[in-house]
Length: 164
Length: 428
Ligand SMILES: Cc1cc2nc3c(=O)[nH]c(=O)nc-3n(C[C@H](O)[C@H](O)[C@H](O)COP(=O)(O)O)c2cc1C
Ligand code: SF4
Ligand code: FES
Image 1: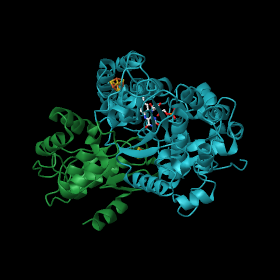
Image 2: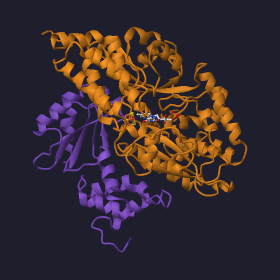
Image 3: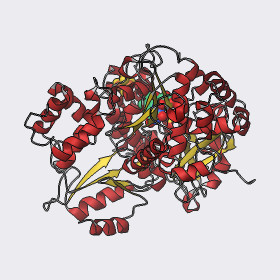
């Protein structure tokens, strides 16, 4: 496979994906499709494209359709541009009981965009997500790989200011 | 309230500085059981017997006896076998496994090693939900430390036994917590549950015999074997042994994880969590995660936190995820949010679940937005009744139970919305 001319799956990206492939049986490369999609999404600024999915399919020896199915089934994969900081606000029951809905409204107002949109400067986008498994710190948001708990309007202000 | 013993099992090290380091774990008896197992001082059969004596029931939500589950595997069957840990933790209200991964990952690793040995598996995967990056890093570092210490890998400590341990990261899908969906996901597919039988014990990951246990279940194993099954059983009640982590969230002063003994009175757990916030009164409790039936305060205040007592009150212990609602909670709004969740997360394979979850959400939404019709209540009862028992996996039931139980105990709030277009709390 190494002789192929991949646009993204090369160098460090390839090495990262290969590390995941190596932890599954040799005849089960497909098992690495989720980490592969995560990694190529990350290097592409947070979203997947048809070309990226096709490259993953080719690299793992999968039918492109099988990769599209995975990429559309799981909620952490994106198919259109997101903000540099994708603010994933949990609105499920425990966060709702502690006013998560108010924080979503506040974010929309503050950033001037709706859920699913990106701010004109490309810095932020808002996404509503299901329970993040951190309800003891409700209301909770995930931004990038980090969790931020016990959020209030004031904490959100500080947080957004601290992110470039 | 008498002094309540805390953190006797999975969280026993959480108060220590860098409790996630192998040095801290080993200084506190860690990996001693594993060494005994490798030295042949504890046979697989003895381990299964001890786990049966402990009376531990699976902590992932279904409460299946762990010793019995392990006895379904034939460790001498030829070919690969797998032990899987379920750290998908997606049930709304649940956040207990996250703190095992973050603060006591080695105890989970030791539990997986032992379980793998018992069932004859030379490889294991821990399925961690994709959002848990920090817990994943902690766990992954702990695995590296265990390899460096020679406790994982080939011919471990000269025993002739091989065991490799890996992590699989999810990417956002509640359904992957269902054990066969989890297997599909590791195989690189959509997380759609398989029709059972065959059960994973005969046809699991890559078609091989597989055992799946929850994080808390597996992390309890080293303590059960270190202190004895009887010790664990005696901590609990006759129907279920041990401690249990209760993740308390919602309207309490001190939300968080409380590892207490099985059978602790609910009212004591509520006090541990600082009581209902803002000096308000308790209205309702969901005792085991969003898939378990909601209970009115009067019933909850009389129950103890164990399977039998919660069942007698009309609900289920589930994953031990206790969601507290105070006297200002709009139950229609709460149910609207839960029905949306199940609608979003249904994998869509079975018509009653795919269509029914959508129906239930749309009807509750219509009621909440003041457009409900008198016949909607009966329709909700009817639809929820038609999903249960007619689908491939537990998500269908999980979606129906909230609807049925909210209507059972709080129907008047739904009727008020239908008649007045607003909640019982709105003074229109
Ligand atoms: C929709 C659905 C979601 C589930 N989510 C989880 C989960 O996040 N974690 C978990 O351990 N078990 C979950 N389960 C239960 C698992 O299918 C399985 O019973 C459990 O992991 C077995 O481990 P145990 O016997 O140690 O409890 C879920 C089940 C269903 C039907
Ligand atoms: S019950 Fe629902 S989630 Fe489960 S397999 Fe059927 S459609 Fe999928
Ligand atoms: S409900 Fe928000 S983290 Fe669980």
